[in-house]
Length: 456
Image 1 (cartoon, one colour):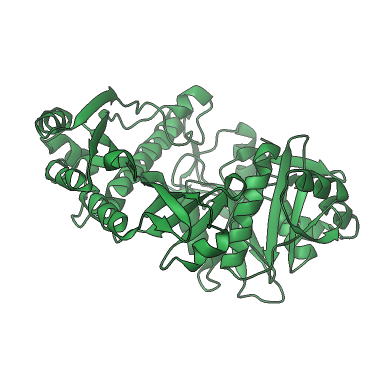
Image 2: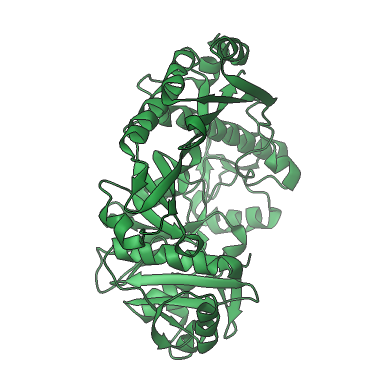
């Protein structure tokens, strides 16, 4: 899928994730967002007419570095606009701006075969935030959308490309809209400036000899007689890997802090009890949870003869979001679970896993005697979530330094009360996380849970 494209001779980047910022603590908030989402690149959007309205657009795609954020530019062209722009033979860019701010669920690149479903989802999103869904696009794009059978209101037949011709991409503006590395100075190999390391000595952690010479010349008037020592490449790599190991420990600790599997089961059962079989003319098909989606539970529905998007929304209370898909025949509703974080404090995750005794063998043993069906496979922990920055060999950069071992255990049962009984196992297995949990509203309420159990 395309994430950048040249328009009018300028290279633009697409597909950033956007979050609003607190104007009082922007620097700290930016670093926090980047750390939590394991991202490095982005753009800080400021509104000169309204300093309190600031946003961060971020990505982990290095290839977008140096491009102009198309969403940033669009928000500078118009305070109220939603565009659908064809950026390749198969890909379309969708971005919306409301009151000068980029709508967080937009700035996305969508393949043509997914365009109709995505537009239907956006209609629901715009309805939720109470703004009209009116798009700006070329006549060609409007014709493509029409052929898909999707009804949209066209505000203006004009492409993003033609709007750019009327906009002044000055040098100073381009600098503001350019996607760059926003991470703060890392405590690893590369040190900007110099650090005093003893009796007047200065240690540079730079891999380029030319950079060392340039920095030495620049600081010479200041340090004069100071002795310059250059760290070896081995020292730099060792520091980079030490920081990367600490990062992996932090990731794993946060995974465990964010989920107590017992609380996931309790909240899941509570929500499934409160969800009726039919909602506003729609029939509930299944209820599911995915760890990667945080504390959300998703309900999938099939439209009945009397169901419409309006009847569905009017029949709901206390929901997180609604998405209509498959040409209006299916829908998904997301509900917030109650707090599923662990109450116990984990200070040393490595020892926590190592010292725990109730692991995969015990889970399988007890599941068997409780009448569950089960299967187990070894989980591959060999790859990092993201490559190590600063390691030249791309394959080496992907290798995890924290040597975990574990199993994926699939357990199948039926009836909600049998799912509740699974907590007898999970209460004893504290090195386990629930990856996915699905319950059918048919087939005797069959459910399936996938457990990730750390053994080392």
